[in-house]
Amino acid sequence: MTPCIAIIESDVLAATGLRVLLGDMFTGAEILAYPSVEAFIADSNRYFVHFFVRDTILFSHVDEFDMLKDRTFVLSSGPGTAYQGAGFRVLDCTMGETAFIRTLLQYHQEGHWGGHGRAVRPPEPDLLSDREKDILVLLVQGLINKEIADRLGIAVTTVIFHRNNICTKLGTRSVGRMTIYAVLAGLVDVSSI
Image (cartoon, rainbow, N blue to C red; front, side, top):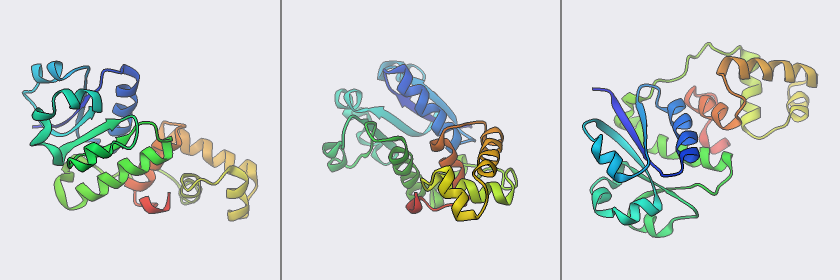
């Protein structure tokens, strides 16, 4: 049975963005978005490994998720300390992209390396050249093109050339999605981003 991840979020744009990020991380899982708990329950004949639930929805349905705390992530508009205090893991949706990705990857590492990580397939290791990997590592660590060029002793135009190749090969221009690839491919540690 294919493992599934449920996103229960009434905001279509937020659910779509999260679905893309989770799809990058959990390539072997089916990511499903629901606008409400009722829609989720109507389609609950699946094997769900995780639940990403908007805080306002969880607040109204806390009993349904209380026994699933270890697999539930609360999507909050702030630090969500009340949910953390109740034992839920919280993703603050008001964070910047890098901080949000870092938090998501930290939760991923804490819960999967020895656990039910079978839904995660590491990225193809030889997709990028060695130079592209060098540039990707510096890029996800927050360096700009000029800083990368200075660090590697190459021209800025060469960095831009390789960066464009990276974007083409990974199918994205999003630094957040590139960060997910770099961490899952073992190129960088979450603590270095």
